[in-house]
Image 1 (cartoon, rainbow, N blue to C red):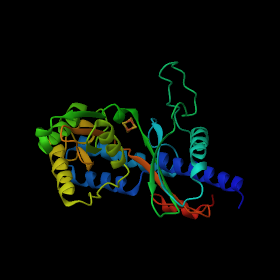
Image 2: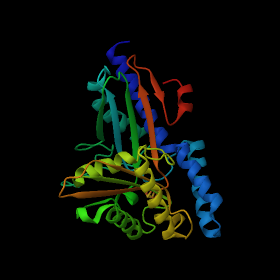
Image 3: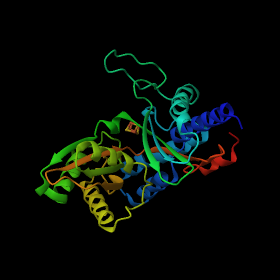
Image 4: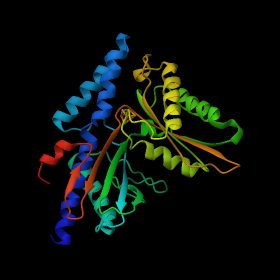
Length: 302
Ligand code: SF4
């Protein structure tokens, strides 16, 4: 296959990936919403959850965006050092964003901070955003797209704590962030927490935590235990779906960390709304594509 035809194939595959994220909630999130519906008993809360679950089904059947706010397009690329098409990816991801905006359609959400202009295609300086990870010894690339609405983005925050505040201080900061957010990020939410030597590292880890499926605990037992404690504490706040009160304010909490500096303890919190839209695909060195979060797409010809 020529480079031009591989480029074209990967462009179409990426448009399909963005469409999957926009219209088809991943199974782990949908199952968590169904579970929340089962365990809530306040009628108003249940009716909000039912509306969300119906919304998910209708969007999937009609191939329409789950929410009018399709966010800004954010990619995470985990690329093997033997993957042959790394250099093509930035332009493919950008062109796919333009195409997806037209075809799905996505709401044009990128407004230039200085000119106030919206190009209408979800691109702009550094947009679509791409986070890169390089994977030693691998010849594939895993691309994940996140579409995250503004209502949950505005809640993100980071702070340098005093190291003596320790994990108790981290817990207090996260719970305060969720409490002060109230129903604005459209609960039930997914909370992702990064801890590290500075706010930049902590925020990167927090965003990376949004790639992890709901219900999947951290591989380090102490971190997994902290996630469970935070999840219990957040659900004890009792906001429930859209602030209608209930047992499920958060569908899950993800935590990750890097070592701190002796003088610092930085923490970042990002929140995803119930419409936690993400889709992943793996690209093989022969140009073949496998959809990971939406395997039904593997049956469709790209
Ligand atoms: S927070 Fe999420 S569900 Fe609520 S309006 Fe924004 S994108 Fe939609």
